[in-house]
Length: 179
Image 1 (cartoon, rainbow, N blue to C red):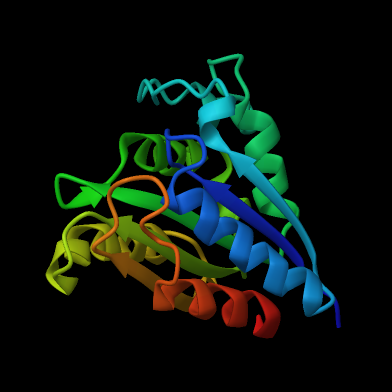
Image 2: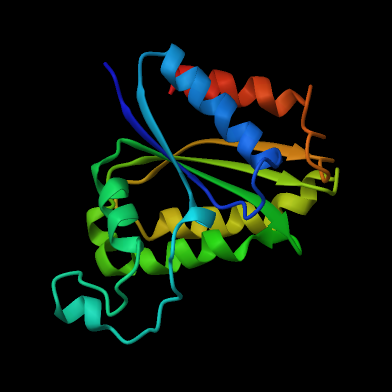
């Protein structure tokens, strides 16, 4: 049965290693007969959560009038959500954390989803991903019925193109195809 996949690429760098990883995942997803969409967060205007709680008294309508409402609706309607981020200072980049914080407006509706994490890092040590993985799992812990469906890590990639021939590309393709 075809699934609806949403890839949320938090990398601020266009054409970077996260982009290549996302493209490979989507290629596998399409070959597997799934419907997929990618949203590059760098192309969206998503403001920081203010903690004002307006969304909780307004039926999920945020005080910000930005692109997050559109992204959040797509998250709610997807079967599988892929979060992609480079590692910055041994954690996820700010764009992904901002997206996570802003799901608060309707987080109870982001339920019963499969989630994948894909991450790149300049550091080649697997421990470089620990903070990012923990943040990903903390996010899933807050979402009812969420399921961790895979984690793909590409260490030792910094400059654009260094991910070429990295084992993570094959892992991303297979994950997309077999989701």
